Length: 534
Image 1: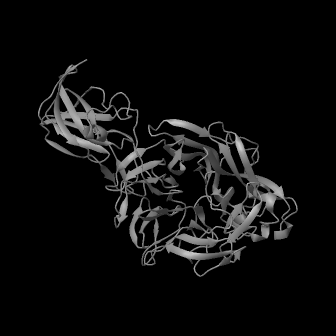
Image 2: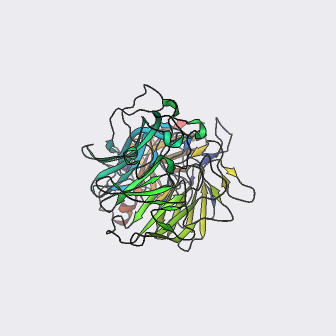
């Protein structure tokens, strides 16, 4: 043990250490990114058009795509735009906070992703606790086929959906390339097609509890109902590599005793019972089994959800979604929006509650996206276009957050361009992170003093830092106690040879007698020798 002598603060200066690297300033960066001294993370810089109150919540995105400088699950501070947590580098579709076994957890999909026009993947779902420790990996084995003959994958969960139920199960989507009769749409009798599937899997045991296949229900969901004609973008079903993606499933959630699913290319919300039978379909162009009211049309949608989750039979409910209204073969006419509908099963009618978008700055997202009502308003991520929007409870746009290069429209808003930076979903959620890893520290001295940089990836409860220093590892004194400034804090102190930093945690400030608040044995760094740049 080394001795610590407490001194009054003699800090010279303290500041956020954030450096913004401009677009095209390094490598393939097409958008500015953040850079730090203590960690090799390069999250995107956030551009705000208007600011909504953070209300204790953060921005959750997973930058990806051809021009994403760093692909990783990422949590960013909505008050200053700085990093809170950077996760494992790689794909992280459907990243966000959910609840499992009574605790908040982080979830994301990772695997092999096939970009548009295929737009799906084969992988696994990862679940992390608030220490950022992996507590479950959910997989789906099987002899699934994809467009490439002979290709196989360890797990076949699709990238589109992660939904943890109150029963501790996981709802996911999957796809299997197979053959069926395509003569009804002008194709061959043994044509190749993408069968869209859903699965409910027990998280603890990885046991499949329920499965469903779109091709088992062609009587209710015929091939002729697709808004993605055979031969679109070259997918004519003639061979395995050109299997027709007529359905394109992109979400599944609980509904009554069964499920509600979203078919992008049937432009439909589809209710299925616990037995897998189709109960009804709301089709966004002509209504399907329902009559559409004024302003309720939708198409190519994502992220369909129901409130309440399990309404009684024939009880009215709210259905909300990200209404893309655009796809690769049909775009630029109707702007994307967050859509909230009142559905009345007893009368088979749909009425408009509200549609959220800014007519002065419309966004035309031809793929991906999500929409989530909140107590204080609503939040929409536009997927293919690296932009998220927040709206007030009255429907007024409060903020637009951009995190990648996008195609600007004359007069305002954005259009879908070539595959650039994207985040399949973007959300505003509360999260408390308590990493078990130690903070990161770098220190350098010059002739006038020592500069200390400190950060702690994922630690949300840090309010300040204590900086210790001295001539020997066993002789350190408290040089300064400073407030935390952004992800990485830079502190200037008198010249020393060794330094150590300890975090000041919010619960400790409120009650000094408390324990480590779930952060492990301590919240300090090792003692390190200062690099001498004099």
